[in-house]
Length: 105
Image (cartoon, rainbow, N blue to C red; front, side, top):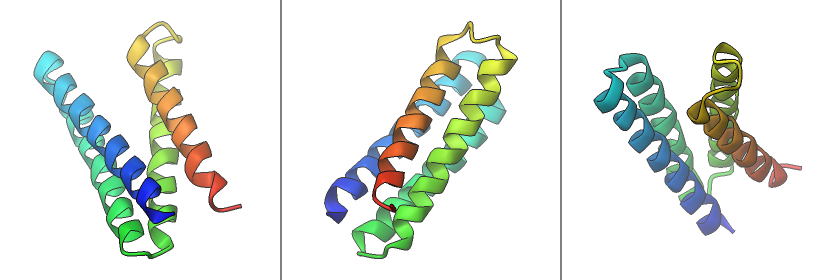
């Protein structure tokens, strides 16, 4: 069971890293680069811990998902739900929170 969890953590972490890098390249957004990089690192740590069969890796990945969800919702309100990127961040954060949370209950 740890292999799918590990893969999802690494996949979402990679998506966050690529997205934050693209935001930096296109807009010069250092906050996006730093926050996306931090969330990516948290996901990678969660994946590594899960891969080592440590249950706390699941909690770390869940925490990264909640951070992603809250950051996306915050940006949605700031842009009046008119921009695609905050909506995608919120959706990805919500789906990953539900996914990792389903293994806890």
